[in-house]
Amino acid sequence: MLEEGKINSKQATLLMVSMVLPTTLLFVASVTAHLAKQDGWISILLATLAGLLIAQLAVNLSLRFPGKTLFQYLEVILGKWPGKVVTLLFIWWFIQINAEILRQYGSFMVSAFMPETPIIVLELLITLIAAYAVRNGLEVFTRANEIILPVILGLIIIVNILLTPEVNLKRLLPVFIENGAVPVIKGAVMPAAWMGEIVTIAVLIPYLNKAKEAYRVAAAATLITGGFLIFTFVGDVAIFGPEVTAGWIFPSLNKVRMIHLANFLERLEAFVMFIWIAGGLIKICVFYWVAVLGSAQCLELKDYKPLVLPVGVILLALSIMAHDSILDLFTFLGRFWGPYALIVFEAGIPLLLLIIAVIRGQGVKQN
Image (cartoon, rainbow, N blue to C red; front, side, top):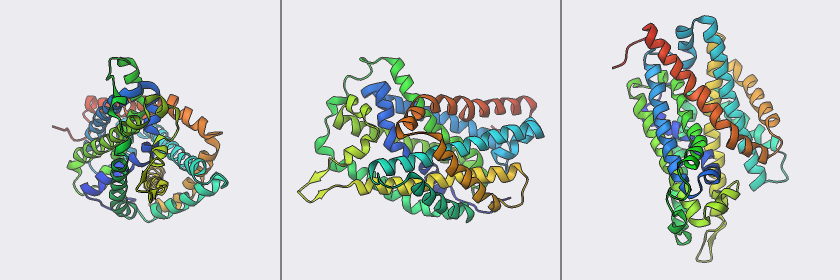
């Protein structure tokens, strides 16, 4: 295989959490509260259930073709040339995801902390670091994530504990009755698209020490991510209320700025910056690695390393050209990205592939 690294189930679970959680934390409350108001936690719960279904779909499909990544068994199911076309579509999607993540990273840093710094400088810096990690292989950024993610999760918990005096749970009332089902379902689309990125497990499974534990890995990662997103949403709305939360792009950052304890513990935005930089770096590494690996497998190369730099250039250029401003980015994510990602790449194509494989009797039958 192009990648010789192997990771265990714990490492894979943590990596799948980092693939979604760090950047989503800043956006999820605003995006969800805009549609579902105080019932956004129900939307995130529905999104978590959708993530579990997508994980089951991706794992069932992948385990039919042991030792093969998504990019490899596409050609087995669809034939060589149709398979390569769909492979290219998935590679494009993974590059597009990463470009959006890169732009989110740069936009947040410029808007919140470094308004005088050109966004391309920040994006170039993190792309170079990610390229170095990807070039060194899966095990490198996976082991780094074992250290980084527990710190991130700990900081999230500590920050919310410190804000307990500001919490008013009455702001979460009434539950469901006021808004009804339609806004809650609409509010679940974008979080479901984020959760649906767990479909990436279809590329990771061949590199697990115990591939049969893949669904346990994906399910655990989805539940952990969903739990922290609900925790964050409830905290944001309980402090600001649904209308104010929906009106801010980064409600979690504004929440941290409210911490003021005993006249010495305040201005803890550095915690959010650490979560964003460290977590965003791991997330970028995951999708960067997937895109490079898929490109090498599609081109039938013996090594993926020569593609690290070209793919990095494409990522950087696409992230800069994709949006005119942070408001344009936010609008795109809130209105268009969710249905596009869910219907086409996270559920649509994998479901179609599984149906074709079952009908044709391809791969190893799963109990």
